[in-house]
Length: 225
Image (cartoon, rainbow, N blue to C red; front, side):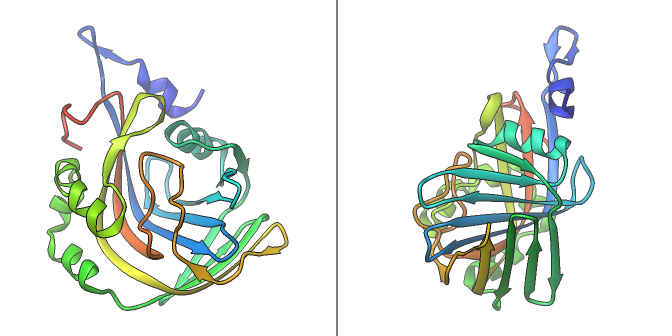
């Protein structure tokens, strides 16, 4: 039984406990000219310790999760929607502005550029405020208008999720091979990926983010992390 399932049913004085999980790290979202879109999570702090994962959607809409352990795969697949889940080593190395992602199925590299106006704006928000679910809920509409990406919404299995962005860098170049197929050149994340309530920004980028996942609490519930 996964950690999320074991905690979901806890009760305090007859009321369900809204368990919260916080993930701090970076998300890279890219499109490719082949039509495949890739989202890489590189988590420095999480309930499972540091780890990385990959979400991939093919041109035909087939959605694949690559996760490094059964525990992380169970939690992510319980929060997002996939057609296929694979447990395998996922390694992400970052050197300066260069990312290298290595898995048995996917090899990917990308380079980031200097932060632009959106990144500067995100950096100006104090860290504790930017990471708070209430702030993520407040900036959801501007984020959808500016970036085409929501910052909070309903997730799978009755869960709710908030994204607190703290920095953003554009991706300026990339290359990827999936199961022996060259995925082509860098392209917008289009159409939007369909893993959860919202996509990554349409323009390829790397975002520093605090993600909070609640088991049972909705948008009007207690938003204390």
